[in-house]
Length: 115
Image 1 (cartoon, rainbow, N blue to C red):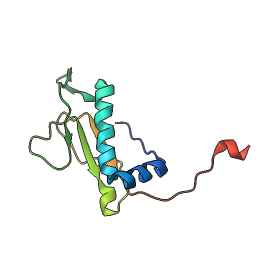
Image 2: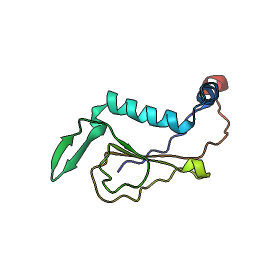
Image 3: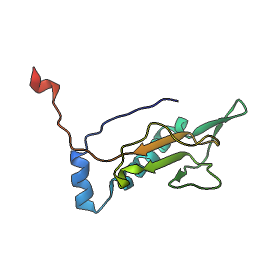
Image 4: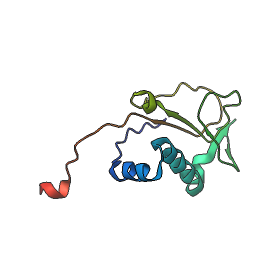
């Protein structure tokens, strides 16, 4: 399992969201679907030492009995938490686990301006 903790600059995104009456979760889901279209490898899974490719994209937002989806997504930022590093999912064919944490204001030091 590869864990990626990445800070993303949202300055322009927040302005776009405000102008178009969108939430960050809408943009997040749209970006995951775009990823699934542009990079089909993210929609593959392994069962019994065989690799399968789905012919559809499915994103799951909540617990489901069938839990057979392309991406499992959690938005814990909506309740004020930071994104977790580990999922609590032990069975199934989900290819991608993704979590969205709370938005934080931060300072950015541009390397070009330091020199």
